[in-house]
Image: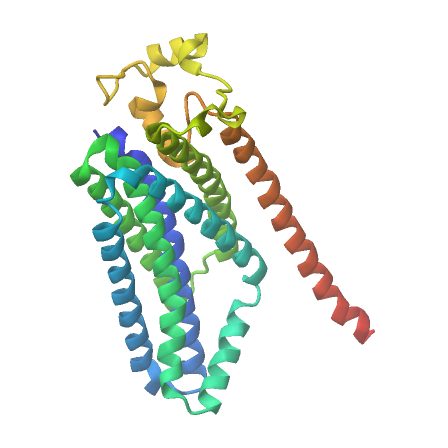
Length: 321
């Protein structure tokens, strides 16, 4: 059973670690700057913003679990849309961090200066709320997608337990990293951390995109639409009908689906790969195309942003000369 839920645990851990650490860094930057300008009296307003963001995130999670899990007729469609949305937000988060990682501290400090100069005490609370709530909303969506992806295979209790374990572990590690960063002389290489997790999240996002397309396919198939016969849904390969499939069946023959024991994606190891990378034993043409195209687009976008950042850094130097 541990192997069957490992994919959800890993996904939840990495996304929680990243999101919680981002929120903690923002809070830490705000507190450090308020300390620097001798405005510790605004610490309480920071706490108000954090608590409000936590309540908002919990409310969002309640809405997802209450209203989006009982629509059996449209469940596959909703899962597919949620996976698409999660892939887009993951990608945006990676690109945003690539662009803003050098300027995030100065941007936050500028916002604080404007708030204080206008004597808007509630502005600090709102700034913290918006910053933390954004991370919380993203995390809720990611955890919901992971939960729904494993729900049909392992059941409600196991799926929820896997997500909870991953989230709590990520929360713990992120809290430790933030504590070490802001209260000790030990320096954490935050830049390298975001670089490594960005690579992992890019792989997750590509898998979510492919998995989302697969869920849409299953919805169309269940609905009986003739669109299922379109060439884009043509099967590209099926490893279960090949020598590779026979080898994998011999190597990973155990399964948590006794009614369909020959499918690699239903084995314990296969289930982990499905949860992390969106693997499919017999992908459609559009799945393979979208998966490959995603890497091309995201890598191009990241390189383009980095090149623009380098150009922007050089322009002031050349003008000053």
